[in-house]
Structures are given as C-alpha cells and as structure tokens.
Image 1 (cartoon, rainbow, N blue to C red):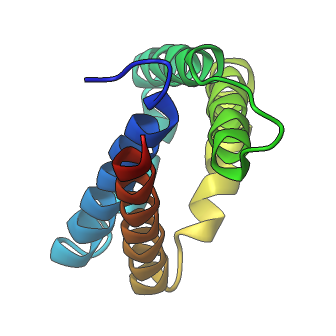
Image 2 (cartoon, one colour):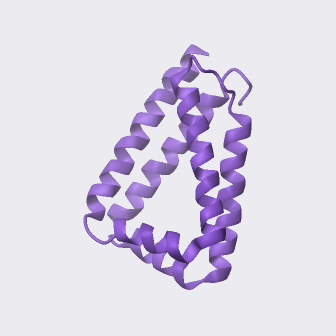
Length: 135
C-alpha cells in the first residue's frame, strides 16, 4: 500500500508495468500502436475522453508525488506527471495536430519503439523495487 514514504516507488512500479505491457502488446500485434493513434485521430469523442483521462492522470501523478530536489527518481516522476498532464491538454486543445505528429513516430520501426518501451519499463520496475525495498 502506498504512503508518503513510498509513493514515488509505487508510481514508478505501475508506470513500468504499463510500459512493459504496452511494448508486449505492440510485439504481439504489430501495428497496434499505429492503428490506435489512427483511431484517436478519427474519433473526436475518443480524443476528448482520452485527453481528459490523460490530463487527470498526469495532474494526479504530479500532485501526489512528493517533490524532493535531492531525489532523482522523485524528480523524474514529477516531470513525467507534468508531461502526461501537458499531453492531455494538447490532445484536448489541438488533438488533430498532436496526434498527426505522434503518428509520424509510429510509421516505421515499431519493433524498436516496443523494445524501448519494454526496456524502460523493466528499468522502472527495477528502480521501483529497489526503492520499495529501501523504504
């Protein structure tokens, strides 16, 4: 269970699980990410709901994670929360442009992006487990 002493570790753990699962999903069904972005581009209601959920998730991470200038992981998670919030705001404000930009990254080597997602996710899970063992 999370508390103020280990919330950064838990957020990092769940972000890592998300990244690993997303990478596995792309490996399992190549083109999954590109199709998902295409569906977002075509559906304004889906853009709105996704933007709201993303904005709320980013704000929650940003506000809940304790700020500690001496803790690199806490800084990274706070910055991640801010970025997720900004991403949600961009999807709401200029979703068509933002998703067009995002789809350019998914045209080619999705296996590379999926592998990178899994590697980052495993790194995050490792960092989280180390943090949670210390706390």
